[in-house]
Length: 275
Image (cartoon, rainbow, N blue to C red; front, side, top):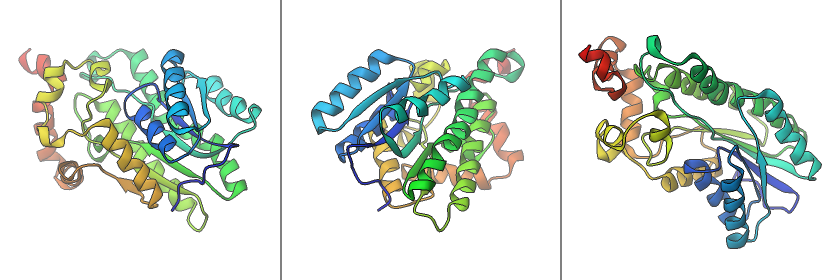
């Protein structure tokens, strides 16, 4: 088993913990007796979740508010945890979001904010927390990517590319840590019923209608699959049989066939197709 053993002075950092998959991962870790440090911008939601898991499972639950697009704010996460006398045995890089629509019509500030959250924050937080794990000879990292990592995605070009980075980066760091007690797992969910789609600009009808119902997974099931994957030392976790098939197809089908199909189906490109 590669999940850390519970201890009063140890914690698991979960970014993007205020809702969705991040909140469910925090609940899942706490249910196994592990202390959690919840990281996001929405302090009220973090504190409500911290109170919930502390009461339900008797674990130590910490809150650190941070803007993951900002380097100084990310660095402060480690500083605050260290000042509280805690060591980080698990890092969950879950925070992320997507922009939508053609790149020719996007908001440059939004694109940069997405890349700073989805790419820069993942690499920075791994760089901050891995040295301590190596020094203590224990630890685990769970990076949340997406099945979008397995192929380019017209209509969400930057998002899919950012998740491809997370997948590649996780594989490489895992290989660097071979022979040590520290593992790296990358979680690649397909569509999940969370606030993610709404934040990306999709209506409920667009998000549920763009993909078959069989591909949709609950945030709880995705979180459980990720935690179980870490416990088993798996490199990649793709929840749901349909999503495993989709990821394999996205990787293997020739781009000349796949990309036109994806572009025709993507709801964010509907206006450009009808122009």
